[in-house]
Length: 483
Image 1 (cartoon, rainbow, N blue to C red):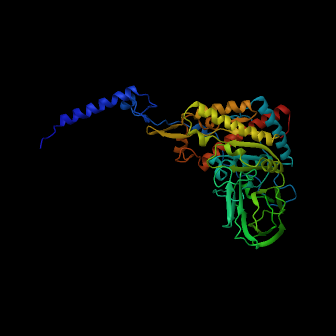
Image 2: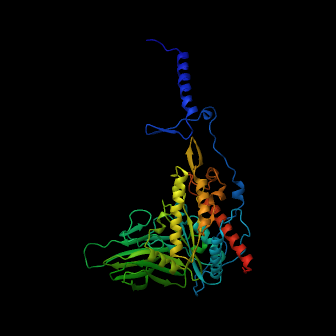
Image 3: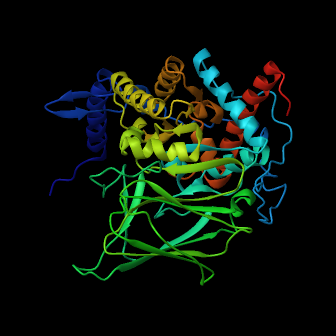
């Protein structure tokens, strides 16, 4: 058998590598499409010098924010006199490193909201709804923002919660009977009637067989000891429902003791079953019995006065589903909640899919249409859009910002200015391009290079609250208002 000499092996390897250098030199880094296949080669300059992971310094960003005293302040004992949830007050930031961006029309709407917010601090009651993707799932970001706003302007309780919650959350506890089924506007299964209401999710219970005997189903709700202090306490509990066409008995137990018995209104409309307490209730169990389930659109756990800050997390959504609920029920629930501000936080689920600038513009146009839809249904409310965080993809062995993320943020800000919407740049607050790897390295974001850790969410939320507070302080200064 002929022996292959080492120099021939070396010459063969040199020849192969030389041939591979030709496409590396001629084919652009983004690749070319040939025979229906995308061909990419390592650029010639990177054959000799490996691409290095960007290590952005975010020490000043992390050190500049204090989240340590979030639970300091009044601890409510739940003695409801119609005034539970009064504010603690305190000084707000006079300026912010990452301010809110707004056109004249957006500023006018936000200032009207600030006037209403001042009224909430003096004993009125309003709602803020925070709609977003999985970045706010489980009350992440919303919980911190709620605590800060309620400390400053009043309010207690987590506010609206789903009729059937499936996300891990620290803000409340909930269990449901096995025969309850969840529907959402943003993920199957969906309801053909689209009667989800303001939370864009709803639940019904299965009725056993074709029988005249009512079927029972139950929902248990209790406060969470791990919630922020303001969310642990509430004096008002409300059950929202619609499409009740058959008699439905409801029995309500507190810590297994019957405290209320009633029947739901069986006219098919949207209704609220309210309960008031002189204390924060313990474990509440709502037991429903009917031959046909109503549609339950949520519960609300709140105080008597102040601001209710409500979390509506829509996993996998880019905001397209904001218009997927029956318009009349959506608007009615917001009227009943006295909603005066929408905080929208979307874009993260689309950034990875953008292949060119036109796909970004198409998405922004679609998001604009959903914002206009909200403005039409709830015209008295202001809107703040929070742009996507920095997000990283693994490219050529390193984590780097998605190519069209900066352009998305730029187009979002432009769209907001043209449509009377306030914009806050979360991407910029994090440190901009390629900042996410530094957040991951410091334990402020997960290994998916997309979602914040609890600590990271607190830092990002504090920066938002500082921008919000600085805008409020500037408005007060211009109007000569008193704190």
